[in-house]
Image (cartoon, rainbow, N blue to C red; front, side, top):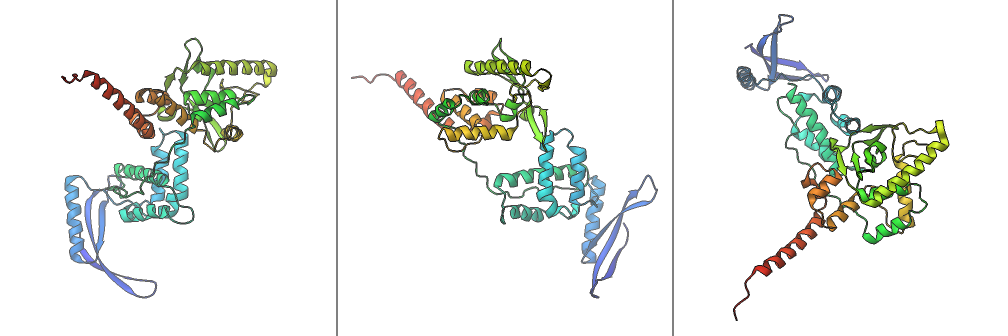
Length: 387
């Protein structure tokens, strides 16, 4: 343990302030042979000695973490470059956008060792204020990124604890899903005749596939003999560049759709085969995709969404997202009496619990119907009262 001494410093305005400083040795640098020391400061000699004693205990217990000299911004750069290699490109892109737009402007210049729980809490609170407040879900996403990065800083020895632990996030208001009603589905399907993406919308409605999965579906994953479809990839886009990626949660799955789905796919193949023969060398379907434009090129999400909204308007249906066709399929399965596990498997959800939380209003109806069935069953078992 080194000495503790009083230090005096002069500010730019000429005033001075006094504080106490102490040092403790933590061995020698094996490369230079020079001693490695930790410097602590405080308002009093007693405070500095207590800090030094606490550090000495940590040395002995092997729990000491040297204060990092990196800023949060510098650590985030390292975290993205060195620790996110296994993440999907779109996930990394979302991380970068959130860091650039929200985390770096507010906290990027703060030293890791100076981050406090209150500082981060105030940052989260500020995201819900101003002219363009973030939703509670978006704030949760920002917290998830920052918390993961700081957790890795703890594991890497840059921090002793994660200062974002125990921050209070805004209450999440689960958005209500908006499936189409049965009569709306009928009107929509009636207006598909002559529509360029007719078969795509049919497959979407009656399989619940995600948009990226539909646009990334290849012919070698469609088995007309067994009447099954294998969901193994999805079409994604970053900065205008399209690429094929594994499904969400890397969950490869098989679905056995209704006959009308397989019929729609057969029709799409006939049209595509015709276009390929007609165009010859100009045919561009390098990924062997099921749904393409006339020249075999992959479809663009924005264009598909535009066609979807046009048919909704033509059918007199209020605006919906493309993703609502997936919700519609799930609700239809549950209404038809399918169990939650089957719905989970068809949709490719990570857990049945997530499926239950997504469609709790439908499962409530199922529970009521189940209760009625059980009541009728037990009613038959009850002995007839003696007369």
